[in-house]
Length: 323
Image (cartoon, rainbow, N blue to C red; front, side):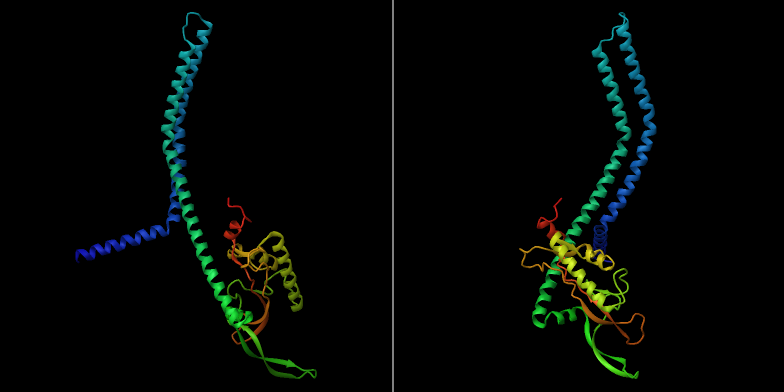
């Protein structure tokens, strides 16, 4: 094997190690913090066992000095000036403090290393989260601009159909007439061509899984959604901010991590914001769960018009404090 090839292999392997170390540095620092923390406790326990004789010796010396002071005060033959006693006590305290510092120095050192590792890992994660939030904000802004251009070209409903994969489909139905006779018929409906349990993006199905809110009555469910939408808008005007999880919680939908990051901000002075909450309620059909054939069922879908990630915007506008 040529020397250049060996050198290249070593450089490549070293680069991989460096990359993996940087990638997992928060985890490595956390593990290091735990190891140093445990070591700190062990060293402190060991130092404590060795500190007892030191403290006992210091106590004996201090007691002896105090006895000498008392003797000098009661007997004229004993000469032990107060200044000398003070210096002797200072020497004892300094000597004892030095001995204790020497005993506990390893524990303190490992404690500092543990704290440094934990803080270092936290700092790296904080920087990564800030960078991730900035990247997400950029992607969200680009998508909104693209979505806006599509809306101008084809309209809101068609844009939502394209985004959610909603297609017009002709399905067969059986109708029973007034005479009790069954007739086969066809109907063109909007069908969600995707996961029957989870539509894309922030869209959700308002169905029987929304316990405590959903009712087996279509008109009642539509009225509930409209009322909740109005309540959310009132809350937005009052609090100036509403998170998606606030809406999900009210509708009996599961709260999500992204639901605590995105939402709406009420700021009439901002021309780019909607300043209102729109659930974008749609009546669509989806494939029945577990169905092997093309059987569809009607369902209500909501696709809230969130402003996007709003944490940094809240800080920038003074709604949330910086610290």
